[in-house]
Image (cartoon, rainbow, N blue to C red; front, side):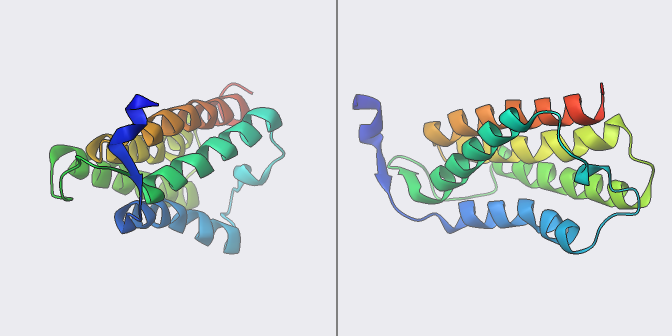
Amino acid sequence: MKPLKHYRFGFDPWGLLLFLLVMLPNFIWFAVPAPNDILRADSATPVVDAIGSVFQVLTVACLCFVIHKDRSKLRFSSLFIATIVCVAIYYIGWILYYTTNVNPFVILLLTIPPCLAFILFAIDRKNLLAILFATAFAVCHLVFGVVNFIVK
């Protein structure tokens, strides 16, 4: 368990804020369906979705509660700025989802940027566990998006 000696349990409010920022459009979507709401269809990948959900929870748990002892204070590093840009692109994807015909590009905007935001933030925070779980979540989330809405 040598690699884990660099970590401690704690609370990172920035990890929680990132999660809430990524989830905000989803909360709106739950309450206000889009005009052409294809995301509410039954999934063709329920097992992948369930595995992805587990990895998402593990990602968020690590981002919020696992702290690398050698991380620097949060600052506007290139990784942090890239994280913010990913969240902004994700929001653009949601705007397009509500205002245009849904196409593969929109699905990819709803799939890739939030995962990249988690990964980039985890890299910035030197959180290897979150990087691993976020990468696994990204693979599952991409499979879900591609199989259900792009190649179906």
